[in-house]
Amino acid sequence: MSKEKCILAYSGGMDSTISVAWIKEEYNIDVITLTLDLGGGPELDGVVERAKFAGALDTLIWDVKEEFVNNYIFKGLKAGALYEGVYPLSTALGRPLMAKKLVEAAKLHGATYIAHGCTGKGNDQVRFDAGIMTLSAHTDQIKIIAPAREWGMSRDEEKMYAQKVGLELREVGDEQKVYSIDRNLWGQAIEGEDLEDAWIIPPEDAYSWTKPIENTPNNFEDVVIGFEKGIPTSLNNKKLSGVKLIEDLNAIAGNHGVGRIDHLENRLVGIKSREIYETPAAIVLHTAINSLETMCLSREQQRVKQNLSQIYSDLVYDGKWFTELRSNIDAFIDDVLKFTSGEVKVRLYKGSTTVIGTKSNYSLYDFELATYSTKDIFDHSAATGFIDIFSLSSRTQAKKQTYKDAK
Ligand code: ARG
Image 1 (cartoon, rainbow, N blue to C red):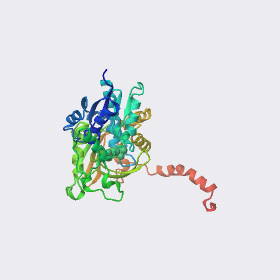
Image 2: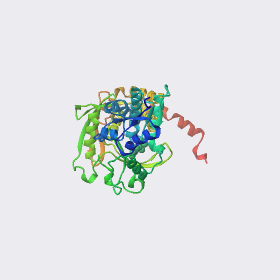
Image 3: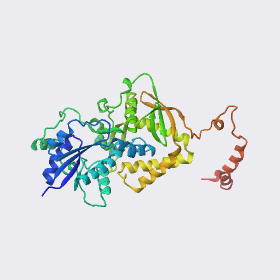
Image 4: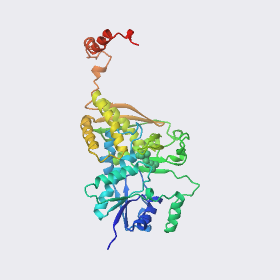
């Protein structure tokens, strides 16, 4: 009788390579690895060989960049999703897509187990487990394995285990730093080592997508981003696919030191952790769309959208992607942004991102209303009547409940 099968989310790193052998031994099942390319330059070289060597029955590599951009990244961008006001949720937006693909692969290969490499301390285990369980809720066929959460091995024990099962792993020497990095097209998250001391300035070797300010060009660079209904569609007047636009913008803005975030963040599991991020394209695009929204939305639309942004960010961060509420908000945002089309000019200089011009065919900015010049058409005399009524309730209250009597 053939063994049951497990689809393992496989990055090619030490933990996930050991996991192949560990799952086979502990559960006596076959392991199929699934490596997902969400962009951002993950090292795919040798991934298949390593998984095979560790004993994988089959090795899958799926490029999901386009789906990631169109169905996850751009939804987050349109919703203004910045967790705690700063983190563009690069890792958090990637996890539901990975969960979805794991469930798809399980169905395709008749697997009854799905495994991921998360520990028991982070947010990602929640996102994977919740995503996988929600998407397979109708079958109840899928069991989850999280080796790193279950095996309780220290780093040294992991190395010993690797030796025991005959795995030679590309590992850096003990004296070298090993940051924990999660990377995709929307950004990279870096934690561990010196960063765990919240007082220590992040060491330069933690960064790889963004230049330190002292090495950035001494001249500014202006980029023009074109949006259609809230989706970025062109860069410097060239139509680009979402993937290419983000890739190019990561390189251009990273060169000017744009996109570094140092965040002491509230994890869902109750821990405060310090994480640094490099998200150059995300910062530029969030800044740009914000300016276009200011031009194309009414004040009330802006306010409601801002309130929803925070709710949406928490939903994404907390692994509640596959919920009705998330898609309800997306539907609302799509409607709100149906006239948010136009161009934004952004200046990149020494780590800063500054909007220096915005235009749209649907602009609510009306020069003749705004101007102080002779072109002014605003009816100044109407202002006094407006203020009379506008201040009526506060004047009435002030008369009846005189402030001088207030204690
Ligand atoms: N703190 C981020 C989040 O929860 C990133 C988590 C992964 N970070 C890492 N360095 N591996 O979304």
